[in-house]
Structure formats: C-alpha cells, structure tokens
Image (cartoon, rainbow over all chains, first blue to last red; front, top):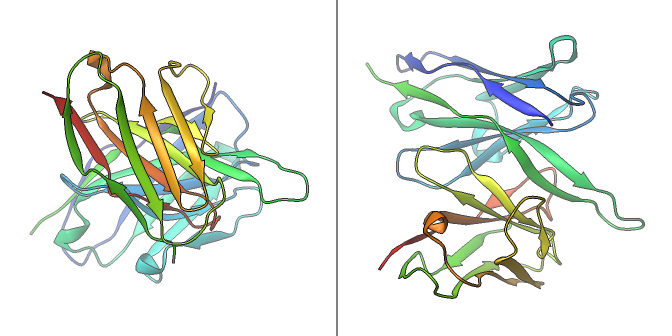
Length: 126
Length: 108
C-alpha cells in the first residue's frame, strides 16, 4: 500500500520561495503521476500541477505557470513542489497525491487522486 | 477550461437521512468524474471514481451516478462519521484537473 509522507510546516517571507517534498513508500513510484493540490484556509481544493516521475516532464495549472516547479527524484521516490515569489495569498495547506489510473481500450484512461499526503502548511507572513 | 459547480454549498441533515449532492460540469466530461470526502484538518479521501465506481474500502451507502454534465453523490443513510465536506473533480482534461467548490454536510 503506497503511502505519501510530506515535509513539515514552513513559515516564509513574502517574495521568497518554498520547496515541499513528498516521499512515497510501499509501492511503485516512477510510473504513477504525482499531483499537487493546495487548500487555502477555509477554502476549497485547487490543483496546481503534476509530474510523471519516469518521464520527468511536469504540467502546471495556468494560474501557477512561471511560479511553480514540480520535480521528482526516482532514486529516493520523492516528488517536490517549489513555489516562488510567495505572497500572503499563498498561505495554504499543500497536498501531494498519487494519480491512480484505469486504462480503457480505445478511450481515454480514468484518473483519480489516491492516496494523498498528510499535507504541509505553508504560512507566508512578514 | 472546464468549470465545476456543486449544489448545495452546504446542507444540514440527520443521522439516517438520505443525502444527495449534485455536481455539474461546464461541458460534457462523459464519466470522468470523481468524488472526495474531507474532514477538518485531514487530507481528502477518494470515495468514487469514474462517476460510479466505489473505491475499495468505502462503505456501500455511498454511490455515484451521472454522465455528461450532471452527476450525483448519494449517501443512502447518513452516519455520524459522514459529516464532512464533499468535493467533485473532473479528470476529462487530464493531465489537468478541476475540483468543484465543495458541499459541507453538517448535523441538523
């Protein structure tokens, strides 16, 4: 059973960057995509981007293009999300999640997020 | 971009009630729709994927239906542990995803 364990809470100054890690254990890492989702206090879930470690290429939500970088290290089964130019509105809990897949012949595969990491609170404050 | 809406945004219900939550997509997404449950301070938990497939370990009182633009999550008999916020998510535009705004279910 795959488990995702994220790094600890961070407090950052406006304008700085934060890098959150997500380490997988108990299953295959490289061939499943990892997505990053954030949740501002009292708000809903917002998808930020994702990566398939075996390919190494990431894709990002338009909102975060140019400010977020998602990477993966297959040797340590760890994915990373780095967000730069932090502002107070970036204060949120950041989650990683494995992207499950069901292949459908001659059609698009189904995808879902399971399991999730425990979340990392990033606080941006001067 | 595909936009997701949910209704209601919140509801109050009693233990044993049948609860229905609706999710609507801004364009047809076939059956590429997932449902999650989130309790305060916890990560979301997958309940339903591909619109109607129950995730392993999830109680059978949860069910999903719909296709195209309109989807429903039903809890057949609400239990105390079901009070939470529920989110739908479209995976039609993979590798991009969109969540609905959530529906909070609390105790009447």
